[in-house]
Image (cartoon, rainbow, N blue to C red; front, side, top):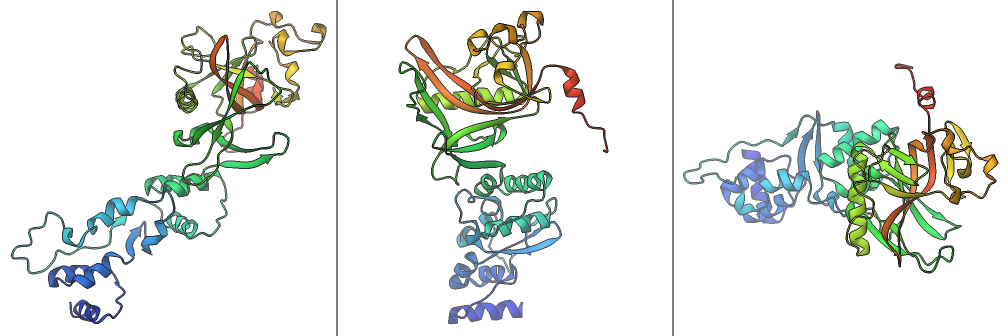
Length: 369
């Protein structure tokens, strides 16, 4: 009490006080020292994460998207206004403020939080593996550090010298609706009667300019029908792709879905399917072997300029047109013509696919190996 009172007496004389914990705030309340209270409300945040104690400067969360966060919404709001200290407390006949201690978050790792602070201070951090990245992202979301989260999600930004466009490769799971945009594609490669818009993406709070979106899918969540040139999605990927198509339609200013719904297709449970396209630039791995897109089973005659004798006849194998994509990368465009409704087209950039379960079994690993 005497040491805290000494701190309180020093403050009116313009002497700087470094608050060791929360006791001066208690004494400032009971003694009603406005200058002390004003200084303390702008001082550092004290908190315990796991078994480690942290003293955090408030301006460390000044980056875009990093505020409001766990601290401003939780602990900091407890002291958000000097007049609202200890909300709900009856101050009549109050001899001393109630005892308080720094807040604790026992179910989070102090080491991981220290690494997040290291990143927030602007220092680089070597991410050891995907498990390490997942730990960082998990705690970013818990503490509501949205700007830092966007910097940590797996992505790759590069400039494509052939297309003369900047591109961002990002997973379907990590796409946020606020980052979706579009840009008109006036390439002479396509008919002038067809209107094309490239789907672009800018990471919220991070990217100042958008990039052409290269969407990555995985977990064997994509099934292709090479005959119909359609793609269906499974499980969570199906809902995410439907939501993405709606956001793209809104961005371009179109109404209605940019994909087919209600179709009866054995490769797409639920009937929703998207138009796909292969190009000469598409990199393909089929059943573990690199192939040309013209060698895909079940391909339509319109997509090939080879003699029919050199191609496997799709009718010889009724299942040859169905393929499962282990991992895929897609370029997204919205196409519309005078006689056709607008549709979201997935242009294959790189695909790892298989047509038979033996190829899938061959890639299996043994537990513990």
